[in-house]
Length: 106
Length: 159
Image 1 (spheres, rainbow over the protein chains, first blue to last red):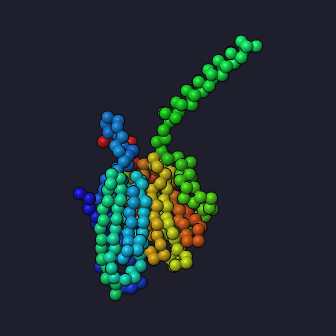
Image 2 (image 1 turned 180 degrees about the vertical axis):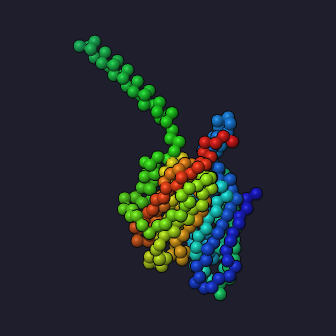
């Protein structure tokens, strides 16, 4: 059901600053909306996102209900060596998703 | 003497009882629908502690006039070098009038190269947004931006 979109440059020069764009499809239900019967729609959000570059954590984010649906997060890192980026999203109701992307550094 | 004691006890219980009722009503009915400036201030205190927050260094890019509060593009950048001894440790974004004062916390490191984060946020009302950056030397820098929202994010909407 859930799916991720990752944008990492396929190749980069050593030492270059690269931008990483991530999007995870998720409803991000705030827990502040009501149904017509007046019942609160329970919260269902992604609470944590992290990115590891060859095993080292380079970016982490705590997300709150104020993050829009389908959380889109972009950040930067320095391309130091060829390898793999691993992304992980953790949320309410046991939500966990992972994705990965590889990069060639010249 | 004894009679007087009883009457004061009765009066005391009566006053205490009515005070309890008056005190209880606002707790039940006045559940805040919006994060107040006080909640914003306490959320910021939770992050910075007693440290001084200075204005500057941080840039918060949000459209000043937003048509749809359900998805508002936001970019926070900090003009600070990203070297092993001097870098941006984290970026924290807060709002004034959503039901919760926090928007997001972003943790960077010296290898980020550039202290810049983008995401999309929800805004329930026209309000002030505050971004605070924590540097590796422990100092805090902030910026605040006012945003006008014409269609609010659906906190009140019935689905």
